[in-house]
Amino acid sequence: MSVPRARLLALMKARCELFSTTYNPEGIRTGNKILRQKLKGPSFVAYYPRKITTFREFQDEFKSLELEIEDEDELDRLDHISELKARSKGAPKKKREKEIKKK
Image (tube, rainbow, N blue to C red):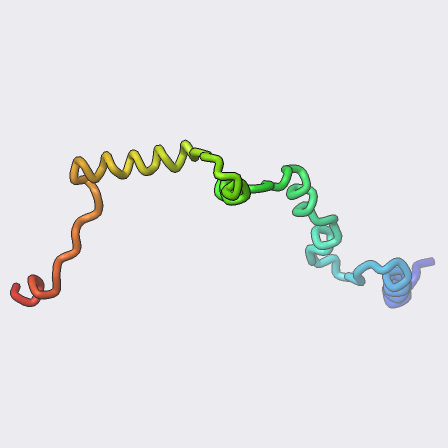
């Protein structure tokens, strides 16, 4: 003896309401499986320790003690810029407006 489809659908609907699942009698792909999963973002963020301070914040913190703290990366950057300027490899100079109007 077979059960009518309407009765099976009513049973499925009641079961979905009872267990808080999605009623989907046609079996259409809805993405609910993915949406129900636990979010991965917080666990990824918790894996790496937070960056406590930057070098500049460290320098500012101890400025009152008058300690000289050198940032090697910043010194290298400034040295590189001065080398480029010495070889005339810097950014081009801006033309004056008067020179542009004459042409």
